[in-house]
Length: 256
Figure 1 (tube, helix red, strand yellow):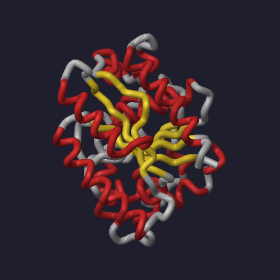
Figure 2 (cartoon, one colour):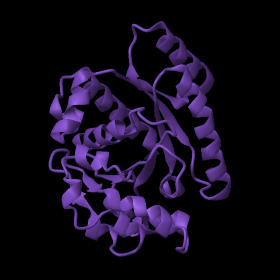
Figure 3 (cartoon, one colour):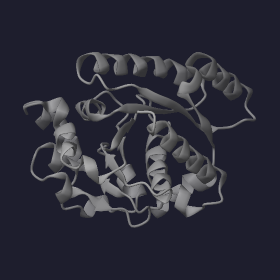
C-alpha cells in the first residue's frame, strides 16, 4: 500500500519542487518504488525530472478530468528512475473545469486508488496556493511534508498552512496530518536562521526532520540540466542531505 505525501507550503520559492524531485530520486536510489505527481501548472517538477512538458501527449490534467487513467499518462523519469505524472499549462484550465465535476476535491484520490499497489511512495508537488489542485492533493494524502526556510516570514506563513491542514482534516480527509517540517536553504552562518530553527524544534518537537538541507549551488544547477540534484552531484552537501532525508522518511513511513 502506497504512502502518499503532499509537499506543500502556501509561500512560494521555499523549495517545494526541489524537495519533491530530490526526495523522489533519493527514495528510488534507496530501492523504493516512487511516483511523483506534478500538480503545478508551471510543470517545474516535470522538467526537473528530465521530461519535456511541451511534448506531452497526456498529463495530470487528462487524469483529473477523466480522459485517461493514471497508466495512460505516467512516464518514467529518464534521469531519476522514478515514475512521473507530469504537468504543463493545460493544468491551469483544470481549476475551472473541476468546479462542475462530481467529487471535484477527490478526483486525484479516485484516480490513484486503482494503482495503490504499484508504489511504495507517492509524492505530490502542490502549487503555492490553496487552489482546487492543492485541495485534490491534500484530500488523497496520508500526510504533508512542509519544506521551509528558517526566516521570520516563513513562520508567519506556517501558521496559515497548519490551519488549512486542520480544516481539510476536519472536513475532507480524516487521515491527513503533518508528517514533518524540513528545513531547506539553511545557512548556519546566519544567527537568525539558527534562532528560527531552534524555535521550530522547541514548538514542533519530533515533527521537525533531523535532516537539514543547506543552501547549495549544485542543487540549484541541477534543474537546468533536467537532472535531480542527488543524481547530478552525489557528493554535494545538498544531495547528501536529501539522501539522509529519504532514509528518515522510510523510517517514519514504517510507523503509519
